[in-house]
Length: 261
Image (cartoon, rainbow, N blue to C red; front, top):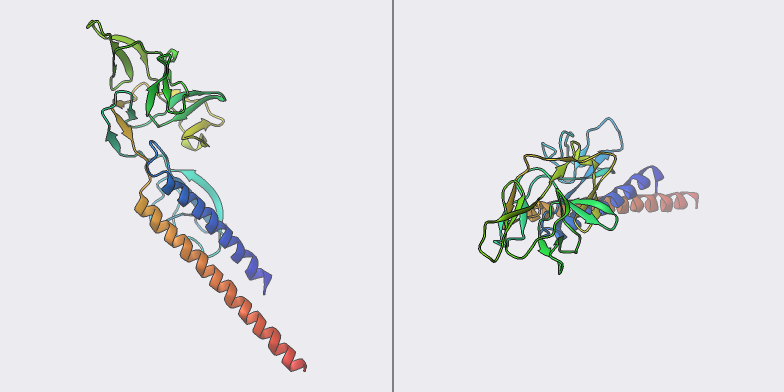
């Protein structure tokens, strides 16, 4: 078989496998609070052609790249994160907090401060506001420790607690949300957390949150399933093309052998 055809065809299959991995991860996290889906971006072998995302279409939701149907022999250019907001689901749990608009919670981890849209919090045995993994949530004064009582978080992130003595609520801390101008600097590190690379985050003074609610994943399972079917068909089409080319090569070899005989 001609290597000029075999190499790009095999490369195309490997790219489709990477595409399937990204789609499968999106589908697996369709119910993960605050999850942001990944979008593979492809380019043709000829760099003069425009790039295409994993689904195709007229507009790139990640901001500004031209979109065309996926090339027949694509290369994986990059995998970007779609930061579009997910739907807000009311839970009525006072420790659930959804971000309405831009921003990320600051989370203290053993490896330093990381960032998340997942506002499913709980109280530790010491009364500290933590993630479900046990990492402290950071406020204006650092880790947030709450006394017993009725917890109230207003739209601007001010945390107040009304004690059991029936007195007036006392403001304890302020949830400080941060962001960066270039969201491409935010890289996933697992456990629904991001780290910021080569940029300093800024506090959002106009950030808005909603207590008793959670932000759903921004994954649309139907769109991802369509993309998965497309990737499978693309893979199968290239496989058939490789098989067809191999059959032609075998036939040519046999014919040459007959002529020499």
